[in-house]
Structure formats: structure tokens, C-alpha cells
Length: 253
Image (cartoon, rainbow, N blue to C red):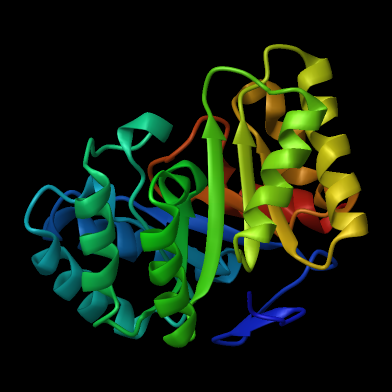
């Protein structure tokens, strides 16, 4: 794990004291890529980071990598590379070997500074995936280990165990996104996030999804979460607010 606090890159300093706004880039082809980047460019002042959701790309990944890399040269923001599988709300149902191959292929493109890897996939083949994590760190990439539950909010003990496991596996940032069924679920996620961020140096991204969980995307000084996801065009998860609206709300906290 990189011992950096706060994490720094492209003029963007990540810290729980000054949470940042990240928007998804979800094009299926080059036409959509240009359209979405135009929208991001117009809202640049309200956006700190970009997450390229490579699972939305419909063509060959190598073509998507080239297109995205070329287009991002004029967008001076740190970029997260993410392939979200169908099991955790993504667009691709792929085997672990293909998942690993796609990530390694992307290392040829220096524009990707951070990588979101799913905890459950990393655990499937721990030794092999440990080598991938080590390779990412050797390339000076930051690793986000993530866990998504689109059905429910686990118990407090389970959520804390997930965050601790992500940290133990070498994450530079831990990420937990869960679906609330009640207001109490939102409160519990926020309490777990606050407990973790107050007792660990590793920074966290925590989200209670959907309309019910919107306050978890706003009250970041309470939760200690260092990034909130918003939209510049299409949302990539339920409950995301427009970047401009989120910026105004964060400034009032």
C-alpha cells in the first residue's frame, strides 16, 4: 500500500478534509465519448476527477483505450480506470482472466492514475491478483478496492470487516457502496464510515445509494469519505447528483 496522506496527482489532493467530486465517463463509442467529454469540459470547475467506466465500451477495448487516452489529453484531471462487472452493477459479464487482461492492457496508457478493482474478484485468485496489485503499485498507480451491494446494507460488523479487508490487501483507498432499505441503513453506513476514517490512515469512499442515501454523498465531513460521485451527463449509479449541484451542497457543509 502506498503510504501517502493525502494522495496527490495532477494538482488534485485527496483528503477527507477537502472531499472531491468525481464524474463517470460512460461512452459506448467514440461519438458518445466526444459528447460526454464536451459536457465534462463545460462543467470543469465543478469536477475534480473522472472515472472511465470501460465496461460501457461496446467495441474492442484497445480501441477504447486509444480513443479515451487521446481525448483525455486536454482534460487535466486524474482519471480512474474501472471495469465494473455485472455482478456488482456493471455492464460486462466477464471471467477473471479477461478482467485481469483488460487491466494489464490499460497500463500502456499513462493517463490512468487510479484503478478501481473489485474486492470479490481480487479474493477469487488471491495469489495471482496480488501480483496484479503489486504491478499496479510498481507503475505508481493508486488502487481502490471496492465492494458494491445493490440489494441491501450489510450489518455494521460486516461493513467494517469489508473496509478492513480492503485495507489489509493493499488498497490506497477503500470503497464501500451499499443500498439502503430504510433511513436507519443510511445512518448505519455513515456511522461505519465515520468510525473507519477516524481510526485508520487509509482514506475511504463510502456511499449509501439511491434517493434514500443522498445525504451520504453530501455530508462527507461527517463520514470522512474523500470522494463523492456526481454526474456530468448520465449517472452510473442510483442517487448521483449533478456535479454543479453537489459542489454547491458540499460548500455549505
